[in-house]
Length: 154
Ligand code: CUA
Image (cartoon, rainbow, N blue to C red; front, side, top):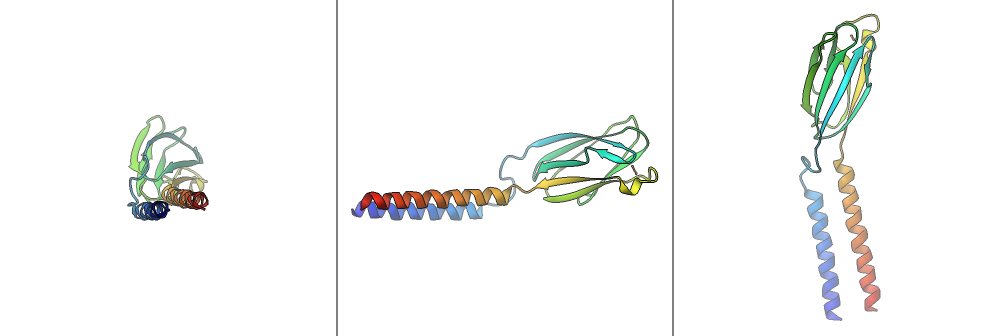
């Protein structure tokens, strides 16, 4: 009887400890940060693909090509700028360390609709979701075990 009570307290203490540890794990470099390679083609007046999605912390390599005239690739938030002539591919590599949505736009005047030559980089922050999921799991399991051990004891 006494042992069971001690076990339950230990269990609660363990759950609490795990909770605190998960809560305070430092943000960066948690979870596997991968490498992603994309080819991004530019033509009047669009990017293909028009949307790129990566995870925060990923190393991203983009091979830039142009199918018609000279374009430029400018990425908001990361201050990347690369001029691309037709027939010559260019590579840029960066670490997607900022989460959010960032426009990429053409940086070389390439025709009438040049201002509308826009795409979007989405950098997903996986951390808050991951942390919430683990915390939920810890709470749920410890509650279940607590209730179960309580039922056993009665
Ligand atoms: Cu393409 Cu300006």
